[in-house]
Length: 377
Picture 1: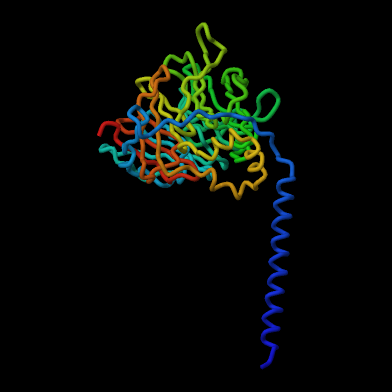
Picture 2: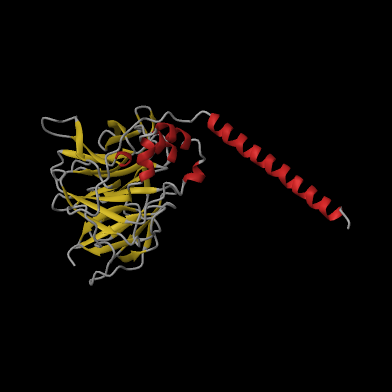
């Protein structure tokens, strides 16, 4: 009997074994090199508070109030913020730069959306001033003013001799002052900043009379939504990465100081709007990510994760498919929470109480289009 087939099999096994050992060596070497590469950030230790339970009785208890949401328009795929003009028309921006306008008929049915303007950037915050101009915070373009014909003027792109890195959200006082967030000097949303867990955001003020921009607050953990109180004695700014709303006092004995308005939010707070009753509505982009909280309490893990390319981490920071909105009273008390536990509507950035409906916006990573639900069905 010929031994040639056996020799060929033995030779094949030997080649496979050598290639396997070589591959294992490459993998081990790659892991060693990865671990030895210095981390791009020096993470700060933080023990995040335990997330509120959705199962216990109380204002965070899970419900299905958002599950019946109806689509208003899907022309804007990711309507980060929503506002209305004096005629009751809805305005929202999209991540491609377009700002859409939606009118409603006498029965309250939404009409086809039309393009109102195009910033050629990424419009986030939208609010009309007393003159009827739409003031816009654009991530790429800075603070803008758009007149009723859609003509765009740049109000500011700098503060203190440096750039505004990421103009995000805003509110406008009765005297025309514009309060807005400069989210982070990273200039964009990056997992590396979550891992680092250090404050890089600011709260800014633009004075339309002097055309000057000033810094009110520094060292904010991803400065996001902004809203004035009904009496304009304080302004709120969301610190998304520390699950809290910070209050900056504009009047009274505490003027010029800040404190925590609401803490231990059940997720990452995004935009804030105020309704006619003085209540604040907070879109929660995602419920808490247990891995992120664990990483904050183990800086070595955060440092290791910060070395992973951003493109490979997009899934790790994707929003949980659980829609969530929080309603706070004027003193910071949690009044209610609105949920879609089925996750049909998720990645919520904005909730606006308007005309008996709660209008809802989202951002990339979440569901698409402007939706609304009846507040008192």
